[in-house]
Image (cartoon, rainbow, N blue to C red; front, side, top):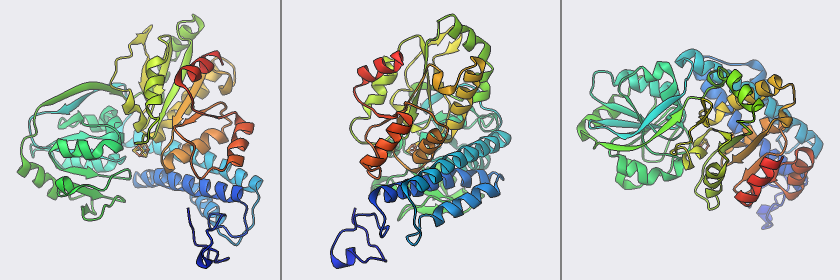
Length: 431
Ligand code: SF4
């Protein structure tokens, strides 16, 4: 990446800056600074949602200011300084995810495992994509009595499990999967689409007139509805377009919030002690269009029958349309929710470790992450800050991580890049 550095002017002289615009710093420090900036963007996204729901924390705000300040070019840091800041960022992100979990459950109720219908029913409909449940709630409220149905898309799927959202009988279910399939899915959906946050593709002309953004989301040439209190334009367009066809896809499970799963804790502990459940896997994260991501489908499909699969975020669409069955009444497949619901995964791991009187790293738990964007970076920092070892990441390593920094992560925490699914699975089960 060629960057312009205002201090050394290297790029201005036609020489590509080798330190990512951080004049006088070595590449490894610059790489950790980049990681911090990406992580902060992710933290800010979660903090924004929590703030919209009425939850803030001055410690979080202070950290964001301090950490951004540390990325200025006129201060001097070592790899060790930046690593410490990254670990602080990870713990702050844990706090923010906890805050968002509290905000979501206070407003929308406690999610419970829910089987979600996919496809569309006959009648006008609006598709809601992104991550913002408040926007979805406002739309559900405003579509009451209009004859317009509402469907979730992508990371909005978990909304179907929250009592105060699923109480709306025009929330029909989910349509479509991860963001990279939007062009095909939005084209085929037929009705208007409301984009509430990031992970939206620039639309082709064919459905640009049916796409609307709100809140912090914006796309060039697309109508932006600044105030969620007035979705009348999108509702009117849904009515004008008229009936969507009847389409039925496979049902999908979601809503395995940690409180719901912990109600099964005695059964889980018994099943582990009896050798009926031998391993837990967390397979999830952001999805993307690059090759190699079928690794996650293969892993999920090959995980042995005596193991429980937990998942979250949009990476799950690669394998969440299959039937996984149960072990002694415990569902084998648990969708914890959106990427911020990594908080649920952490609580579950900590509680299970407590129940067995061992450390989290001693649990028969393997974590396989797919990374794509900034929130994934924030989550990765949280797992690192908690000292979670032997995590596998892929499909490729981020370009902003230098080989030295990857080695640092491997040395400190034993993290690995994903490889051959069969070999990785064998190694994880052995560990
Ligand atoms: S999980 Fe990541 S890639 Fe997927 S929609 Fe959410 S932020 Fe975007």
